[in-house]
Length: 169
Ligand SMILES: Cc1cc2nc3c(=O)[nH]c(=O)nc-3n(C[C@H](O)[C@H](O)[C@H](O)COP(=O)(O)O)c2cc1C
Image 1 (cartoon, rainbow, N blue to C red):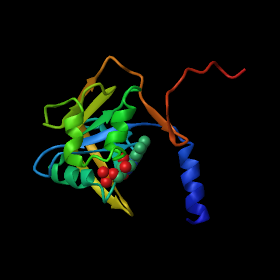
Image 2: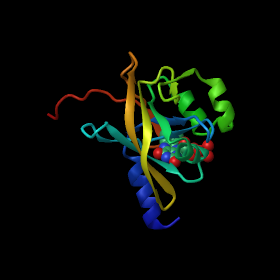
Image 3: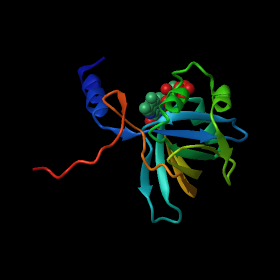
Image 4: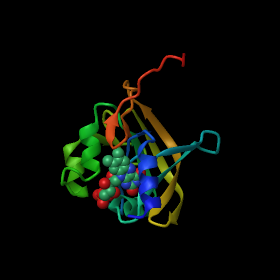
């Protein structure tokens, strides 16, 4: 590993991010992958929009590009096991992952994972292949909010939770 790459990885590991699962269903198949790259882009366009960066070898990326719809599921604090499942850490293939979790299809037919803090169902707006990852832009068409606003975080290579800080003294 080059020094620059190693420093990049270490630096980025210090950015605690929330954890999401991008799911998709349709003619391209049902698939899902755990991501930390979910980013809000705009609340004020024709539709709200977001983006996710997904490795080009991930079957979920291929399926999203074919299905042209997906759901970004923002995980809640008690969903570490689900995160590991969709990160392939449990040894399941993409087809069986959905047998092990509760989910329901949203208005676009995309899998909304039960218990997620929030789900954002999207139509694919555009996508760009940058080096190893597809940057996938979605137009949000439906948002569901659960009664658990406490999102799961990942930072310094471990799951974490956010705590309120008092002002600097
Ligand atoms: C907390 C966490 C965040 C991740 N974020 C991303 C991400 O933003 N994009 C991505 O392509 N893979 C991400 N991964 C890796 C994928 O979840 C997955 O392990 C990888 O794509 C290989 O699995 P697959 O071939 O089944 O997709 C993340 C994994 C974890 C545990």
